[in-house]
Length: 293
Image (cartoon, rainbow, N blue to C red):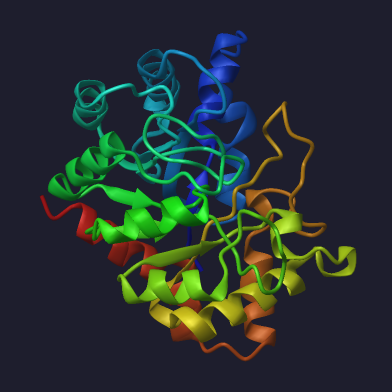
């Protein structure tokens, strides 16, 4: 079974590892795990949790990835745009190949407000222009990390290609980054998709459910609301990030473990057609829409 992951920080890791002097970080931290887990591609991002030169970071990441670019099927993405001050720079990133973006990480910035920002603040006028640009250029608008007001403000802009790349159901785990049922319904009705995330506190607050069984509980819940054609895997593996303790699941510690998800889906009596949709076909339908340029 092939797997596509709708959210991975691989490009950010390639950037930081290269800056730290690693000559081949993709080989040292990613290639083996991706191959073991049958990962064929996904949305790989540079994330902006602080201020830095985003153009330099992306160019550095792509240079490190260059020897491997024909082995994987990747959409270039941005997790947060705090370091993209204007549309001119956004256009430069688009011309570099970027086809996905979240407006914020967790912060409030010049475009929108993330989950750690003031709940009364939402999308800014410039943020609306960024969403318009993304619509005009067939880019993926990603609402993961937005606070509720920004989430609904973005939906009012009628995004052409809409996802929550790595979010779960708030009803099963009340993490602020998860989506409430009303948000899931709104996301579905707006034509959006969701990537189920494997961060332990996003899966469950119950330590006994911070495992693949709890993860598949999330899949079942999300499929029930969103529909089988709207649910992907947005794993957010953190084992290769120095600045995070591995906060993934007990039995899903890296991309190497992802086929265990398939095993549990079969145990839950998902048929092979639906497993394929969750693991790769829904993602590939998303990619087809991005490529319609």
